[in-house]
Length: 218
Image 1 (cartoon, rainbow, N blue to C red):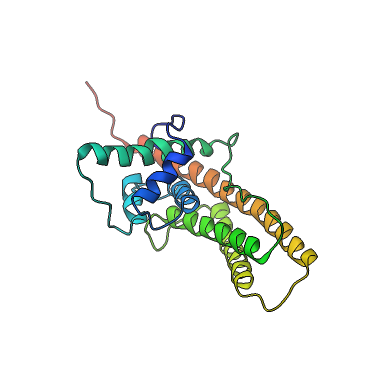
Image 2: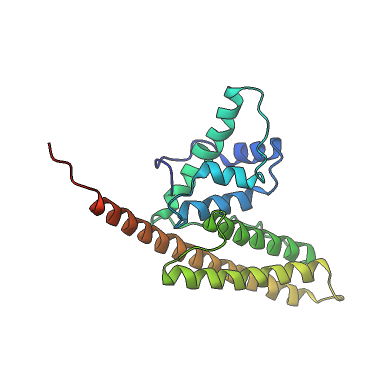
Protein backbone atom coordinates (compact mmCIF):
# COMPACT_ATOMS: atom_id res chain seq x y z
CA UNK A 1 0.00 0.00 0.00
CA UNK A 2 1.64 3.18 -1.17
CA UNK A 3 1.25 6.64 0.15
CA UNK A 4 -0.06 9.30 -2.19
CA UNK A 5 1.71 8.60 -5.47
CA UNK A 6 4.33 11.15 -6.34
CA UNK A 7 7.77 11.06 -7.88
CA UNK A 8 10.70 10.29 -5.64
CA UNK A 9 11.76 13.55 -4.03
CA UNK A 10 15.11 12.38 -2.63
CA UNK A 11 17.89 10.71 -4.59
CA UNK A 12 19.34 7.32 -3.71
CA UNK A 13 22.59 8.84 -2.46
CA UNK A 14 20.75 10.84 0.20
CA UNK A 15 18.79 7.77 1.27
CA UNK A 16 21.96 5.69 1.53
CA UNK A 17 23.57 8.45 3.61
CA UNK A 18 20.58 8.56 5.95
CA UNK A 19 20.63 4.80 6.47
CA UNK A 20 24.32 4.97 7.31
CA UNK A 21 23.92 8.00 9.59
CA UNK A 22 21.21 6.32 11.65
CA UNK A 23 22.96 2.92 11.73
CA UNK A 24 20.27 1.03 9.83
CA UNK A 25 20.64 -2.70 10.61
CA UNK A 26 20.35 -3.61 6.93
CA UNK A 27 21.84 -2.31 3.66
CA UNK A 28 20.09 -0.02 1.18
CA UNK A 29 19.20 -2.75 -1.32
CA UNK A 30 17.50 -4.80 1.39
CA UNK A 31 15.56 -1.84 2.80
CA UNK A 32 14.43 -0.95 -0.73
CA UNK A 33 13.17 -4.49 -1.36
CA UNK A 34 11.53 -4.63 2.06
CA UNK A 35 9.63 -1.42 1.39
CA UNK A 36 8.45 -2.83 -1.94
CA UNK A 37 7.22 -5.96 -0.21
CA UNK A 38 5.35 -3.93 2.40
CA UNK A 39 3.79 -1.72 -0.28
CA UNK A 40 2.52 -4.93 -1.91
CA UNK A 41 1.32 -6.76 1.21
CA UNK A 42 -2.26 -8.04 1.32
CA UNK A 43 -2.34 -7.14 5.02
CA UNK A 44 -4.76 -4.20 5.01
CA UNK A 45 -3.59 -3.08 8.46
CA UNK A 46 0.06 -2.67 7.46
CA UNK A 47 1.60 0.78 7.59
CA UNK A 48 4.95 2.21 6.45
CA UNK A 49 5.63 3.67 9.90
CA UNK A 50 5.34 0.21 11.45
CA UNK A 51 7.64 -1.24 8.81
CA UNK A 52 10.29 1.41 9.40
CA UNK A 53 10.17 0.57 13.10
CA UNK A 54 10.58 -3.14 12.33
CA UNK A 55 13.56 -2.41 10.08
CA UNK A 56 15.26 -0.76 13.04
CA UNK A 57 14.35 -3.81 15.19
CA UNK A 58 11.71 -1.79 17.08
CA UNK A 59 14.44 0.54 18.32
CA UNK A 60 14.22 3.73 16.28
CA UNK A 61 17.07 6.25 16.43
CA UNK A 62 16.90 9.06 18.96
CA UNK A 63 16.33 12.48 17.42
CA UNK A 64 17.50 15.81 18.80
CA UNK A 65 14.24 17.53 17.94
CA UNK A 66 11.01 17.30 15.98
CA UNK A 67 12.61 18.77 12.87
CA UNK A 68 15.21 16.00 12.74
CA UNK A 69 12.53 13.34 13.18
CA UNK A 70 10.43 14.85 10.39
CA UNK A 71 13.47 14.91 8.09
CA UNK A 72 14.19 11.25 8.88
CA UNK A 73 10.68 10.00 8.16
CA UNK A 74 10.21 12.41 5.26
CA UNK A 75 13.31 11.08 3.50
CA UNK A 76 12.21 7.46 3.90
CA UNK A 77 8.53 7.98 3.12
CA UNK A 78 8.52 10.71 0.49
CA UNK A 79 11.97 9.82 -0.76
CA UNK A 80 11.93 6.04 -0.97
CA UNK A 81 8.42 4.74 -0.24
CA UNK A 82 6.57 6.99 -2.67
CA UNK A 83 9.16 6.41 -5.37
CA UNK A 84 8.70 2.65 -5.07
CA UNK A 85 4.91 2.99 -5.17
CA UNK A 86 5.06 3.63 -8.91
CA UNK A 87 6.19 0.02 -9.44
CA UNK A 88 2.64 -1.16 -8.79
CA UNK A 89 1.98 -0.17 -12.40
CA UNK A 90 2.52 -2.90 -14.97
CA UNK A 91 4.24 -0.34 -17.18
CA UNK A 92 6.86 0.37 -14.47
CA UNK A 93 7.89 -3.02 -13.02
CA UNK A 94 10.13 -3.33 -9.98
CA UNK A 95 13.79 -4.05 -10.68
CA UNK A 96 16.43 -5.36 -8.31
CA UNK A 97 19.50 -3.21 -7.77
CA UNK A 98 22.16 -3.54 -10.41
CA UNK A 99 25.21 -5.52 -9.35
CA UNK A 100 28.17 -3.87 -11.00
CA UNK A 101 29.84 -6.15 -13.52
CA UNK A 102 33.31 -7.34 -12.61
CA UNK A 103 35.64 -10.12 -13.69
CA UNK A 104 34.33 -13.45 -12.45
CA UNK A 105 35.87 -14.33 -9.08
CA UNK A 106 34.83 -15.91 -5.82
CA UNK A 107 34.55 -12.42 -4.32
CA UNK A 108 32.22 -11.27 -7.11
CA UNK A 109 30.04 -14.38 -6.86
CA UNK A 110 29.81 -14.05 -3.08
CA UNK A 111 28.78 -10.41 -3.33
CA UNK A 112 26.24 -11.14 -6.09
CA UNK A 113 24.69 -14.01 -4.13
CA UNK A 114 24.59 -12.01 -0.90
CA UNK A 115 22.85 -8.99 -2.45
CA UNK A 116 20.19 -11.10 -4.14
CA UNK A 117 19.63 -13.22 -1.04
CA UNK A 118 19.16 -10.11 1.08
CA UNK A 119 16.79 -8.55 -1.47
CA UNK A 120 14.58 -11.63 -1.54
CA UNK A 121 14.59 -11.84 2.26
CA UNK A 122 13.76 -8.14 2.49
CA UNK A 123 10.88 -8.37 0.03
CA UNK A 124 9.36 -11.39 1.79
CA UNK A 125 9.74 -9.80 5.25
CA UNK A 126 8.01 -6.65 4.03
CA UNK A 127 5.32 -8.67 2.28
CA UNK A 128 4.40 -10.53 5.47
CA UNK A 129 4.41 -7.23 7.43
CA UNK A 130 5.36 -8.82 10.74
CA UNK A 131 2.79 -11.62 10.40
CA UNK A 132 3.68 -15.31 10.56
CA UNK A 133 1.24 -16.15 7.80
CA UNK A 134 -1.08 -14.39 5.37
CA UNK A 135 -3.66 -15.41 2.81
CA UNK A 136 -2.30 -14.82 -0.68
CA UNK A 137 -3.94 -15.13 -4.08
CA UNK A 138 -2.94 -18.40 -5.73
CA UNK A 139 -0.48 -16.83 -8.18
CA UNK A 140 1.20 -14.84 -5.41
CA UNK A 141 1.36 -17.91 -3.15
CA UNK A 142 3.12 -19.86 -5.89
CA UNK A 143 5.52 -16.97 -6.56
CA UNK A 144 6.42 -16.73 -2.86
CA UNK A 145 7.38 -20.40 -2.94
CA UNK A 146 9.57 -19.90 -6.00
CA UNK A 147 11.27 -16.92 -4.34
CA UNK A 148 12.06 -19.14 -1.36
CA UNK A 149 13.78 -21.64 -3.63
CA UNK A 150 15.72 -18.91 -5.42
CA UNK A 151 16.74 -17.38 -2.11
CA UNK A 152 18.22 -20.74 -1.10
CA UNK A 153 20.12 -20.99 -4.40
CA UNK A 154 21.62 -17.50 -4.06
CA UNK A 155 22.50 -18.27 -0.45
CA UNK A 156 24.21 -21.53 -1.45
CA UNK A 157 26.26 -19.69 -4.08
CA UNK A 158 27.24 -17.07 -1.51
CA UNK A 159 28.29 -19.75 0.99
CA UNK A 160 30.28 -21.73 -1.57
CA UNK A 161 32.04 -18.62 -2.90
CA UNK A 162 32.98 -17.55 0.63
CA UNK A 163 34.32 -21.02 1.39
CA UNK A 164 35.61 -22.39 -1.93
CA UNK A 165 36.54 -26.08 -1.89
CA UNK A 166 39.57 -25.41 -4.06
CA UNK A 167 40.78 -23.63 -7.21
CA UNK A 168 38.14 -23.25 -9.90
CA UNK A 169 38.77 -22.36 -13.51
CA UNK A 170 37.62 -18.99 -14.79
CA UNK A 171 35.13 -20.44 -17.27
CA UNK A 172 33.29 -22.23 -14.44
CA UNK A 173 32.96 -18.99 -12.46
CA UNK A 174 31.79 -17.15 -15.57
CA UNK A 175 29.07 -19.75 -16.10
CA UNK A 176 27.98 -19.32 -12.49
CA UNK A 177 27.85 -15.53 -12.89
CA UNK A 178 25.72 -15.94 -16.01
CA UNK A 179 23.41 -18.28 -14.11
CA UNK A 180 23.03 -15.72 -11.31
CA UNK A 181 22.03 -13.07 -13.84
CA UNK A 182 19.44 -15.44 -15.33
CA UNK A 183 18.10 -16.17 -11.83
CA UNK A 184 17.87 -12.42 -11.20
CA UNK A 185 15.45 -12.04 -14.10
CA UNK A 186 13.32 -14.87 -12.69
CA UNK A 187 13.27 -13.19 -9.27
CA UNK A 188 12.05 -9.95 -10.85
CA UNK A 189 9.29 -11.78 -12.71
CA UNK A 190 8.09 -13.52 -9.54
CA UNK A 191 8.25 -10.33 -7.45
CA UNK A 192 6.21 -8.43 -10.02
CA UNK A 193 3.72 -11.31 -10.17
CA UNK A 194 3.23 -10.91 -6.43
CA UNK A 195 2.95 -7.11 -6.70
CA UNK A 196 0.23 -7.31 -9.34
CA UNK A 197 -1.63 -10.23 -7.78
CA UNK A 198 -1.76 -8.66 -4.32
CA UNK A 199 -2.68 -5.25 -5.74
CA UNK A 200 -5.67 -6.81 -7.50
CA UNK A 201 -6.67 -8.64 -4.30
CA UNK A 202 -6.50 -5.43 -2.23
CA UNK A 203 -8.63 -3.57 -4.75
CA UNK A 204 -11.25 -6.32 -4.56
CA UNK A 205 -11.27 -6.11 -0.77
CA UNK A 206 -11.70 -2.33 -0.90
CA UNK A 207 -14.52 -2.63 -3.45
CA UNK A 208 -16.29 -5.21 -1.30
CA UNK A 209 -15.88 -3.01 1.78
CA UNK A 210 -17.28 0.00 -0.07
CA UNK A 211 -20.32 -1.99 -1.18
CA UNK A 212 -20.95 -3.09 2.42
CA UNK A 213 -20.95 0.43 3.82
CA UNK A 214 -24.44 1.49 4.94
CA UNK A 215 -26.15 4.02 2.72
CA UNK A 216 -26.87 7.32 4.46
CA UNK A 217 -30.10 9.08 3.61
CA UNK A 218 -30.55 12.82 4.09
